[in-house]
Length: 390
Image (cartoon, rainbow, N blue to C red; front, side, top):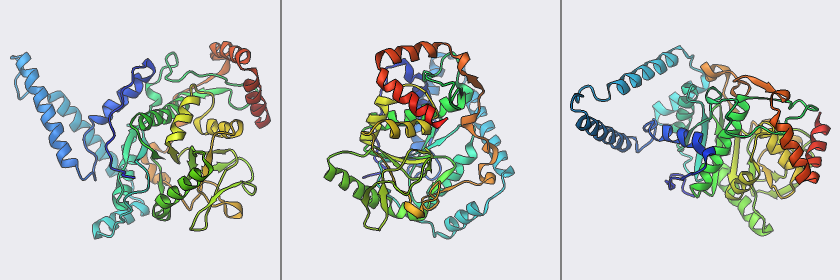
């Protein structure tokens, strides 16, 4: 698959997509990212567009001089650049980053190129530029292309107008409350699914901005995905979600084997697991998740675990070591940033933005009553699963 393919822009008509459209437009006009081989051409195009806009504005308002046109925007950009520079100077350089710098300076960077996916999404808060810059450096050093996807910030959410309906919080489990950060995180991953689906992409890799792939994973991922697709074709049933990193909630010793790869690794049907910081979605997975993820119930990785538990037709796979060789978070596949690499964003965004509890969401009780009436069997299964986990 060609990772650099430029998909057609998607159009959304729903009011629920307003926040998605806003974030996408802000990303599209943010300018080219460092390390992009086409950055020069893109910069010229954006510059021409802005000049034309300024000229038009000047013609409409003759009193406005050409020298003053766009001055406010230029000052804002200059201030933002200065702020980022100050953060960069204040942030300590980690040993990992120093190693990447040395590889780039000596011309000994890697060239993994195509990882077998159409697009690599990196989820990043606009308020965390240091993380994005580090991920950019990792990508340049690894010879891969990726896309910055601005996450739904908890700072921009209103309890009265959440982008996802908050439903089914439960008194009987620890999931009796919700933070703005948790809703924002879930909405971000839903937006990625929408973007990938409406852009016609077949396979995408999603990374949080403080997790990167090991060299060993990048070297084998494309071939691994091809073999997984071949197995799905033999079975006549597509796979949906592939964990590259997970925290298993149960013993992994009895995980059924989906296929044994030519390199000897056993791809498994994992037990319900938490973790959405590194995963691959197939096109069938985008469709399945978008048709089921219609509201916020629990954090998105817990929701994925719920789907594993409740729906036999949801095909989740795991590319981590299995059996006695399994380790939580799959260190053979992924590496987490250290605290010094996280810099100004060492906090947990999903736990930020304030918290509300079930009594503060009275509308949810009506939703649960309606769900119990319309689909009693599914609701009871969900409730039994939640009670079993308490």
